[in-house]
Length: 52
Ligand code: SF4
Image (cartoon, rainbow, N blue to C red; front, side, top):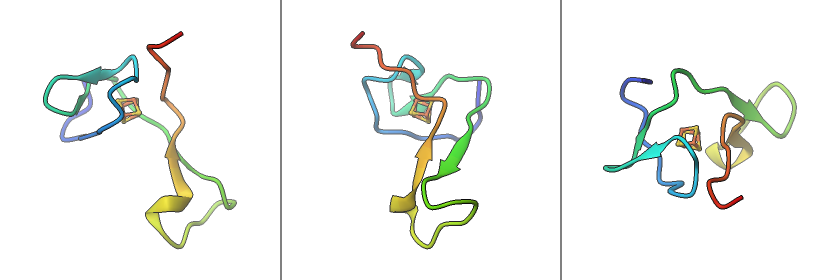
């Protein structure tokens, strides 16, 4: 389990009660290339929808 990763995306397969992430590891990407200027330009690539 990833330690100290808090996440509010509660429809992710890895989301757990208390806004915890239960993935062994997560991969965070920038959607503006290899760098980002704000957190809004980053995303968790490990996300998997639990709605599907
Ligand atoms: S994998 Fe990413 S989106 Fe899913 S709970 Fe963990 S941090 Fe959140």
